[in-house]
Every structure is written in structure tokens, then in C-alpha cells.
Image (cartoon, rainbow, N blue to C red; front, side, top):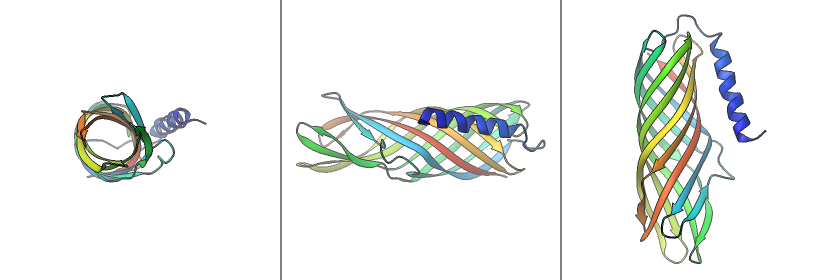
Length: 206
């Protein structure tokens, strides 16, 4: 089963679970929780020559850990909310490419994101939402003959998610995001990263 089929199966499973969730569950209020990356990958394009560096292709399972806090309002079947997310660790790394005969190693670091969520509640305890975010991620690039350098990249993320209220206060979340970061210069080379994540999370609703 490939990654797309696994993701579709997971989303379908949470949606089906929602039809058996707590009838009294409501998504209004503050929450805090955490998530881990089920699948995480990144591509970094070197702007001058168009070289593309791929991270996370071989070792992309459970490589990152996030802390989440937010607030939302449910009005009937509609939901509006905002949240912040801080990445404590992100361990995507590896030998990714050769640029001008120089071996390049890349590694991701910590980061943060602030986001808005807009969703629909088709059944009590089940939220299907879209998400738009502004995020920052640290990337470190190492060159054989030059040394290493790191830079904080900022950009916009968009994605979709499903949250299921397993009880009155506990929510289980599955979310897919794509971040397009602006280009930055590392050791006189311009890079333009894109990050894709599929996260599994748990949140406590107050």
C-alpha cells in the first residue's frame, strides 16, 4: 500500500469514527496538545541551477514533534478557529545532492507556525477543516569544501484535516500540510524549500 492509499485510509477511518463519537461534544473553547509527523518530506530547489534536493524520502516516519495551542468557536455546523504550533524537533536529514561537484547534506530544525482553521461539523464530535498558516523553519546545509550554514525560511502553508472527539475533552487529529517557503541565501547559494507533512495529533479541549 503506497503513501497516498495509507493517508486516504486513515482519513476515512477518522471520518467513520466520528459517527460514533460523543453526541455532546463541541469544538468551542481553548485547547492544547501535541502532534508527531507520520510522514514528513521536503524538497529544496537551488535557484541558480534548478537543482532539487530531496529530504525525508528514506527516513520520514516520526521525525518531528510539535506542541499545539489554540481557540475555536463552533456555531451550528460551522467552525472558526486560530492556533499556534511550535516544532520542538525535526530530524529530516541526509546526503541529498551534488552541486557543482560539491556534496550537499541538508537537515531541518525547529520552527513555528500560526494558523487559521475553518471547518464543517457534519456530525457531533467530527470536524473536517481547511487550514492556512504562516510558518518558519530552520534548514541547515553543509557543503564538503565550503562548510555549513543555516537559515530560517518563512512561508505560507495550506492543508486539510480531520478531528474526532474521542471523549468530551480529548480530540484526535489527522492533518496534511504543505509549506512553500521563500528563498533565502545560504553560503552565497539561493535555496527555495517546500515541506510536506502528515501529522497525527491529540489535543485536550478545556
